[in-house]
Amino acid sequence: MRNRSCQTNLVAFYEEVSRNLDAGMAVDVIYLDFAKAFDTVPHRRLMIKLRNIGLEHNICNWIENWLKDRVQRVVVNGTFSNWASVVSGVLQGSVLGPLLFNLFINDLEVGIESTVSIFADDTKLCKTISSMQDAAALQSDLTKLENWAANWKMRFNVDKCKVMHFGRNNINANYLLNGSVLGASLMEKDLGVFVDHKLSNSRQCHSVATTANKVLSCIKKGIDSRDENIFLPLYRSLVRPHLEYAVQFWAPVLKKDINELERVQRRATKLVKGMEDLSYEVRLSRLGLFSLEKRRLRGDMITLYKYIRGDYRQLGDVLFSHKNNQRTRGHPYRLEEQSFHLKQRRWFFTVRAVRLWNALPSDVVMADSVNAFKRGLDEFLNKQNIQGYCDTNIYS
Image 1 (cartoon, rainbow, N blue to C red):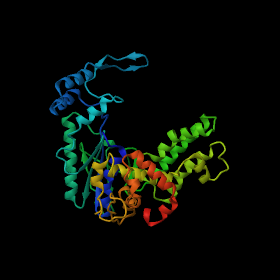
Image 2 (image 1 turned 60 degrees about the vertical axis):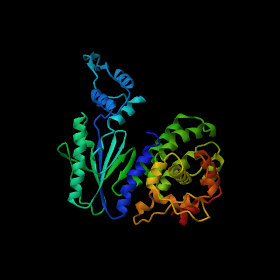
Image 3 (image 1 turned 60 degrees about the horizontal axis):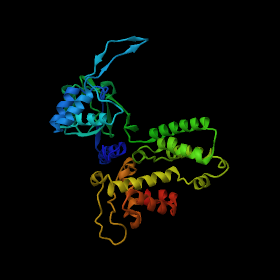
Image 4 (image 1 turned 30 degrees about the vertical axis):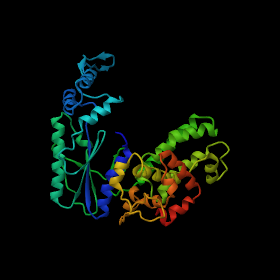
């Protein structure tokens, strides 16, 4: 989806969850999993939907011709089954497949009163719970989704569908799907990120650090050269992305987690020829790298720029409130700083990033493109003591 990503989905959804938890409310989130989602979309029903949304007749015919007359068979130990017609499924790995799936489930949330979050085939249902009546309302919405799936020949994998109860005073209600009680979970992997019932990010930090270290070990064993021009691009393209996927959502808070991530880059930079005996700070300077901590701070500002002035502005209007900017000092895009009670809320992206954003120079914020903003931001950060920003009121 244009101007949407796993990170924007996670930030928007858990903004509501964390805000409600900070207000002392309990929240239930139901994580739903379609069984073989892309493979089970029925072609006839898909074409009905495409025609109902007003797609041109010729385009509908073209899509129908693309889908129909497909056959498949199974081969086991050299023995072939009979050919069978393929009457469902959109091709994974194609450009059109995900689009057709999104159009097919586009009306999934119609009539649902709870918060629904849909990203491809990942669906979440969320509601604040203060009584059994609230739980009954969430159950009603879950039943509507169950009925939708039955009507359109889709089904949920009940064993993989879970409920997570957030909040100390949660009544831990049970929910039924297809006649079975949903299992309660203390942790789920949501769009590739581990989320637990306390909104802690330690498991996610440990997971990505472990994966990144394994990839780094493979590079070390598989590549003889330690030349900067060979080793560094491999680190940037194969290792660092594991440490920074959707990191604006799950950025580490605890020192042990911050250090665990940073150790990966410390190890990587030490593997470069000629860097073995240099301090980490000198290695970063020689290699033209920021520390991961500084890159996360930089990423916060770039992401916030996209929410306020870039492609995510529609989302930013919901997540952030602008200050009454009548002061002559500072830039005109300063934001209201949200109050908080819980540490989980304090370090959530929409709260933690605002103070530094408000402190940025006007000429940086007023950049007319993301690339121009990055250049100005890098010049600004190069002049600053990053540790000072983390330890003072600007970023705490």
